[in-house]
Length: 114
Length: 112
Image 1 (tube, each protein chain N blue to C red):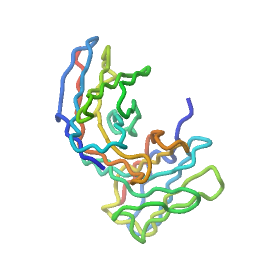
Image 2: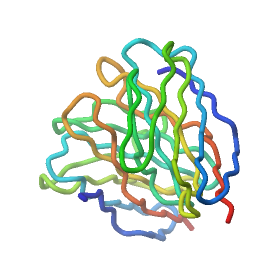
Image 3: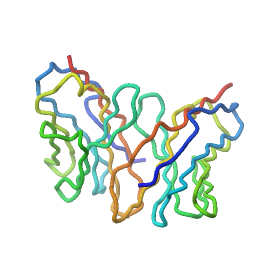
Image 4: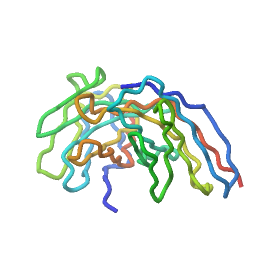
């Protein structure tokens, strides 16, 4: 069964450094998402992306965050200058083009900011 | 998107059916009910979704009441691997937000 894959599984970064989290969505999916989950807390929506542009973003997704689909297969989340509070699990999700299809999630990248 | 209410935790014996309830009394006519689960710290796993008819797939069954104000996810023969947090989410696929709003869900523990 096709799945969303995320790399790396664990990323350790110094505060203030840039980090890029990578996702390969399910082939032929058209809608892409990033969520995060701080340890012990709820899964929170960050951003949705469709037709090469952001369609919706949350208050968390400030100027330090950006997303890109650089080559038609990868979908990336960049954090420009990481803060301690960015430490979390980051989940990528994708969805097909039928309106009620569910989002399918990857197993996440654990980001640890030191 | 409508809010949902789920019990914080439930227990189930291995091999028995697990029935997980969800209240969504303010659901709108075009909002679907989606169920996901999260095993430990893995990514949320899609289980099933429906609008108003009952649905069944290889993982579970979804029973939606006639007034659509509540639903029940049924795992017919729970195994230890079904121990997870189960989330009930309602959203309108069209004309609304794309985001899924996760609550705290129900922590299901399947006991041997």
